[in-house]
Image (cartoon, rainbow, N blue to C red; front, side, top):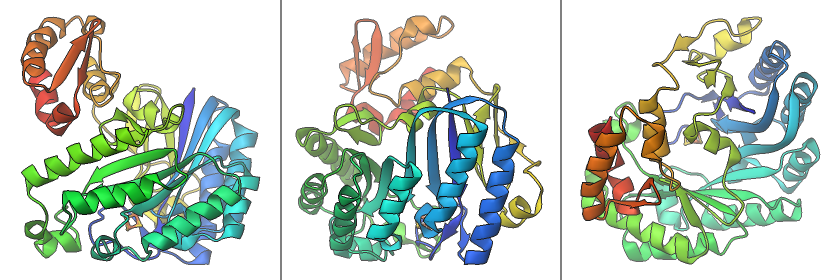
Length: 358
Ligand code: SF4
């Protein structure tokens, strides 16, 4: 089954750490964008799909009617089978009515950009909401009968100590949420944080590693089991859509800068709302690296706590087994029943481990 990703490129304002492609919002440009998305959906092959994900940008910025129209077009064109349908939500851009409209449109999973339980950290990150506002919006989502709710949490933020983080995690895990994505703040060159040398104000690598390990421990204790480097869920609430990325399953991205993996090709569309809206359908794409190789499957599989089975990769098997001994001896991995899994300590250095293996 294929996943569908819809990239909604609008943001109310740019967060100082973000280098994702996004543009300022007007109703007129959102309408042109929605019409272009529908034109692109109408030429999709008539495939089976079981996940739809509205990501961004800030998908919750555009009217809920537009989201409903896009879902309607998908429903007409594809064979949607018990789909998980997610939208990323910024707490400041939804109301109780909008959340109810999402529910009526068929959305069944919300991903809230909460980021922190600490308002000083939220201010530093340039977010407009407070934790209290995020909590109130999540309660409204529950009232709208959403039960599959994810939150983003950011670590490695200026002034963040383990004590502050513990407080933040206690507040977030006390909310009626089923899934948490944990991100380490990364400073990208071409952002206000990058230009202002914000990196020197942040916890150093060792402190950030402690914050990550502390988060894993606290989330597990609160009933959120880690299933990927950055993702934790209550039983039965792993993100079906995001698992497609790590399991090397197919997905089709629609929208400016959306990535796809379909028919053995990885490709993405240009970062241009203008060309996306003016072209009858998106023609121009950029090819990415060769897809579906053993190297790629090992790289993605080691992100998951399910790990990899070296038998599945004959060309790499001996190398993996030999290296695994060393990782396990240093607490970075566990090799059991023929499966190699990285530990949280291993996830912290997973880039080095993966390049060591492949
Ligand atoms: S972090 Fe999210 S809301 Fe902020 S600018 Fe980036 S995409 Fe937009």
